[in-house]
Amino acid sequence: MHPLAGDLSILKDSEIESKIGDLTKKYFMTHNTSLRQQMGMMLEDYKAELSKRRQAALEKLMNNGDKSLDKLININ
Image (cartoon, rainbow, N blue to C red; front, top):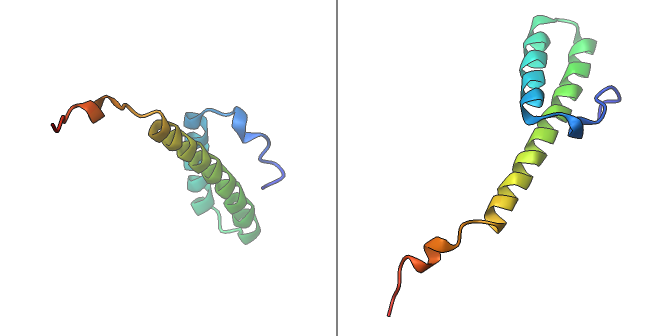
């Protein structure tokens, strides 16, 4: 984790997506390799946080899914 990333859990998904887009644009604008390396680490942190959130949301959806369709097909 990048030391300047801070606590990413307090950010909204839309804020993280915005930061990823902004940082990606700036990444390709610079030719400074050291700066690119630092930006790359920040991007990895943002993307990992967003991926973790989406995975948790998917698991929650799968566990709490609508079971009413199970009764739709009645085989007697």
